[in-house]
Length: 202
Image (tube, rainbow, N blue to C red; front, top):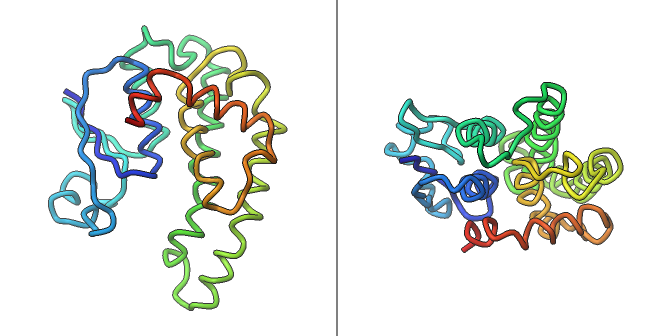
């Protein structure tokens, strides 16, 4: 059985949602970040990066949200969580998920994990002050360029929607009003109403 290591409030939620959307048999293991459980020897043996998500499969451990989302979509094709038979559409999904991982998530992390990039208190404070601006800029791109339909890929729900939902849920804590982005806000509500999402959140 698949086993997902996660922590509340992290991007692991996107993978958890995808597993529920696929009706995949799985179990979850919650890590206590407040007590640095992700840095424990036991967890580092599973994921040396000390981060979540990590998914234990019968062939080994997989990490990084974009990779796990496509794995779930490919492992459970009947759920139709990615356009696996359309190279262009699949590349667009990967493009979007890569943007969330490499740009949007990093902009958010400058508020929570600025110590990854600087040691000086004034540098850390400067990065933290910048978060509302950079997150706003990121979501302007999503609002204007990516959300061309009810879902990220238009008419068809995919793992990208779970990922966007997860990161959009961070906007309030980043000092950004989601209502500034009507398409994103409406998308957030649509995803939140899905039964699989309710199960993952529970």
